[in-house]
Length: 170
Image 1: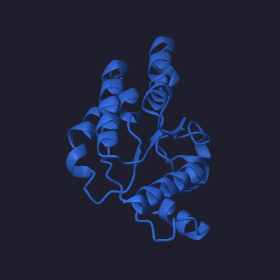
Image 2 (image 1 turned 45 degrees about the vertical axis):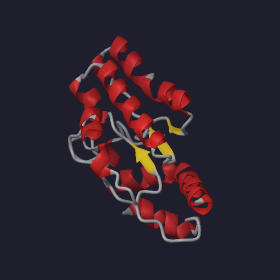
Image 3 (image 1 turned 180 degrees about the vertical axis):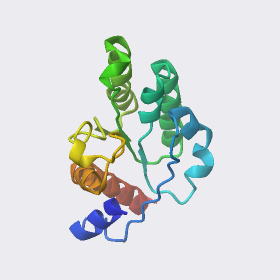
């Protein structure tokens, strides 16, 4: 996984190797992620990146439903004492301005409410860039993934440091 490789290459993995487990399922909505959260994020997890919602926006799911699911995910992870990095999404413009405004507000508002750091838009610099996406125009290609990793790496390094500090206090 490129993110795990980038952490190792930078040598900022909190003094021990970092293993990143992708618990995502292709096509998942935020509600799907919530439904499997308790078994997808095992007791051995040190931290969690929450990156859900893209499929919600593409399907036009009511932003209130997405918000409720993400809010509950963040609540449950906080109850477990796990450091979290919330990774935001944005609705595509074709969903209309009212939908886009309601959806795009979810992530910064939840990050503030739960006191978790936020990557405002996971696909920043990649969305709508033809050369960084697969033929479908939605999913990043290898170059797009490299761009995403380079953009989120500083926040992920901070997450790893918070997880290491939590582990050291235990």
